[in-house]
Length: 158
Image 1 (spheres, one colour):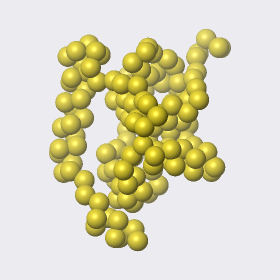
Image 2 (image 1 turned 90 degrees about the horizontal axis):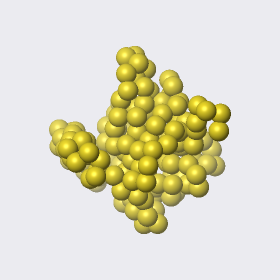
Image 3 (image 1 turned 30 degrees about the vertical axis):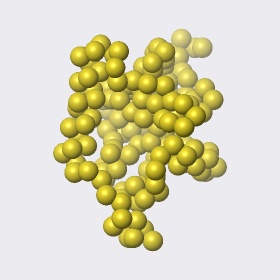
Image 4 (image 1 turned 90 degrees about the vertical axis):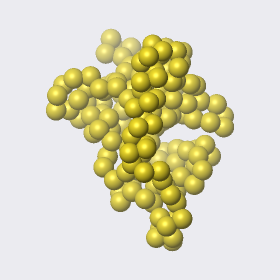
């Protein structure tokens, strides 16, 4: 069944996906954040700007990701455009879980972790409600796609 899904699911070429990401980030920068982020709804995921600290460089790295809200938490997929390697932002979060997110309604500190067991199954089902044929796209990757939970966090002891 996995081989059948791989054959029937087509992604745009990698250069196209990477270009779309660059254009999205550039649009966000040029408009000083007025365009590029949106809130999730009951039927559609939103976009956020996640800023992590590079695990090798120690420099801030920002990217725009799809997410939905699960109570106070934000939930994203570590899928790198469905390509094979893990996304750098996820590797950075695993090395240093504290990060910042910018949403349409403001910024907040978060701490990232991977969803496991029943939580993972519940959140995967929710992603499936928001996307088309998520399982087929995930089957394109050689490993399991991590579901990343970003919990509210403050270094002020809140």
